[in-house]
Amino acid sequence: MADFVSQYWNWFIAIPTTLGILGCAWLVLGNLTDKGGGSSSETTGHVWDTDLHEYNNPLPAWWLNLFLITIVWGLIYLALYPGLGSFPGILDWTSKGRYEAEMAQAEEAYGPLFARYAATDLAVLADDKEAMRSAERLYASYCSTCHGSDARGAVGFPNLRDGLWAWGGEPDTIKATILNGRNGVMPAWALPLGGDDAVADVAEYVISLTGRKAETARLKSGQEKFQTFCVACHGPDGTGNTAFGAPNLTDAVWLYGGSREAIRASIADGRQGQMPAHGEFLGEDKVHLLAAYVLSLNP
Ligand code: HEC
Ligand code: HEC
Image 1 (cartoon, rainbow, N blue to C red):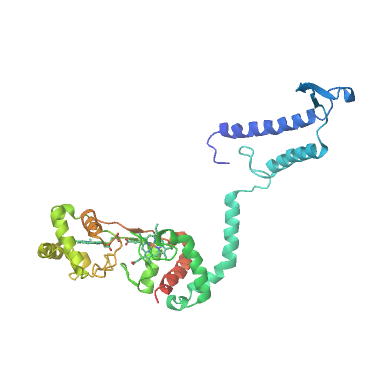
Image 2 (cartoon, rainbow, N blue to C red):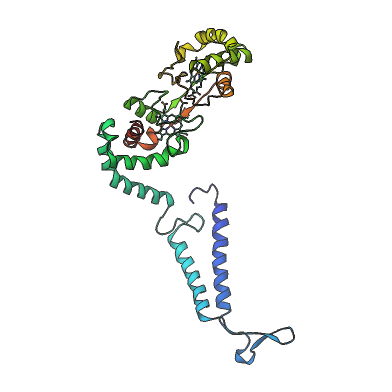
């Protein structure tokens, strides 16, 4: 509420709210007294269908009392909690404050546990059933949106349980991946290679690397181009390089799809997968636990 840039919005909320409550009070209190002059006038004078009279009975007491209670409740609420323009309320309650208090409480409860996990070697932690149960929950909250609830990934999001690593599968490397994030940079090759035909040649060569049947007429030119343009990152034999996150092209596992079209598209337009850094966001202790979890998926 304190975020209003001008007093206008403060009054825009505070005045109609106050008037609304006062209006309700006036409506109820105004109708408590019998204006018709007591029992002398039993009906309002409204008649329908020749003999259907509308009676002027007082409102039932339980209904009136409920209405009065809601008014009093509204006033108490607005005095205690934020709601009346920029008035913060006597309790100084804020959703941010509540969130922070709950986080502090959770930190107090689980902080020592995570700290103990953080002091445990990754490989040992990966075998700790209880720790992995906590880790699974962290994974579901922070990683499953991209890598899938079963960690098998999707197009553009790597499978984390197939034992194949673009950036390396050493425990500390996996931890570094999660802490600092990774940016895959596969340049677009359509222009440097000189057009679709050349891209198709290299694509056939890449297809042949996995042992699949490829168009033989294109292989020779494809191999030459691969040795010129691609070896720097994918290596002379196409098995990749974890220093650049350049994947192994010979294992028949494809981050962006293994169809002829998908491979041609990867080469022609390039690919830039981004694994966001989680270190600052989650803190090192939780990242440590998550790295052990990823390890545990790859026995
Ligand atoms: C500068 C390093 C670099 C060079 C040079 C390079 N690549 Fe890549 N390549 C990568 C990286 C990094 C990725 C992974 C991109 C990602 O993770 O988003 C990749 C991904 C690919 C993929 C997709 C793999 C998959 O699993 O879906 C193919 C296919 C590919 N490269 C082929 C080639 C070919 C053919 C050449 C040569 C014309 C080439 N690359 C040159 C770095 C490179
Ligand atoms: C916004 C989507 C996103 C989220 C959230 C995300 N990742 Fe990733 N992650 C990716 C992408 C994309 C890559 C592949 C980067 C590349 O192309 O090289 C990746 C790569 C990785 C790798 C490296 C895989 C390899 O082959 O080397 C690991 C390990 C990993 N993520 C673990 C995690 C964990 C654990 C979490 C949860 C803390 C997580 N990721 C959250 C998108 C995400």
